[in-house]
Length: 345
Image (tube, rainbow, N blue to C red):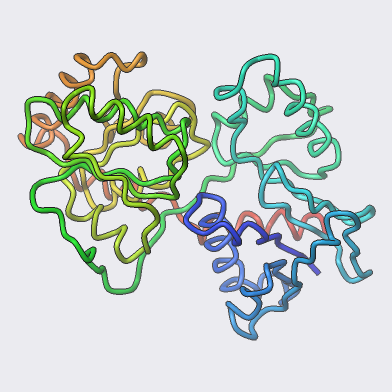
């Protein structure tokens, strides 16, 4: 039996939740490659989410202290590097590492504690997966893998098969859009400066945090606070409406293990502007525009204007943008994980 840890489904509208949901769905669809020996480890309310095609195990608080595994469990896939649910030996463990965000967000004096925690997880794992070459480099530069191979398995493109639904209150004019948990790592506070000398709205969707104040302070600094909207979490149906109808998609993050919304926006053939940090150049390639590394406001405004003009004048082949996005597949991601599972069984 292989168990895939979907515990982070408890945090909807986050990258880890999206990862767990999509990988689980793709694993269930291809469960025949595992001879149907698949079990999903889920919060109670998600039990049965994929019907009776798969077995389930419910997350209990006591599992943090002792994660019991029956003899039938041979492989446990930990879906992220900060998990507290670690299987006992001799169960084989796969560890997926999304990012080492603390290297970029926290003071150096705090890195030791985070590195020690990750080192323990790496030591325990039988197979290590990174979701990008950028994350792999961070692992190899900061962690002793004891010669274990770190494999890169990319995330997939999210396809929304339902009806795209407009928000209750539609934007009254052209708008720029971004989506992601509103945290300092997303670097959203550099975006209001782009609203000078134009009439765009800026709409940011995602789980909120106190960092919202910093964004609005910057908006007030440039006199555009009436055109910046931080709208909180939204459904996929609404998110894809915003992506499909925006003038441009923006993601100026200082740390991204992958950057799922980037390929979502490319699929809809929208101009995409991102930072040149961590995994974003790797995922966006030559199909996105890059902001100044230091986020100097005037330089960013110039880069934005030039990028929009470049896009509007047809100097970028939008068919290739969609093709690039389609190169990322959850089905392919799950198939590679299944190959890893079978190799460990």
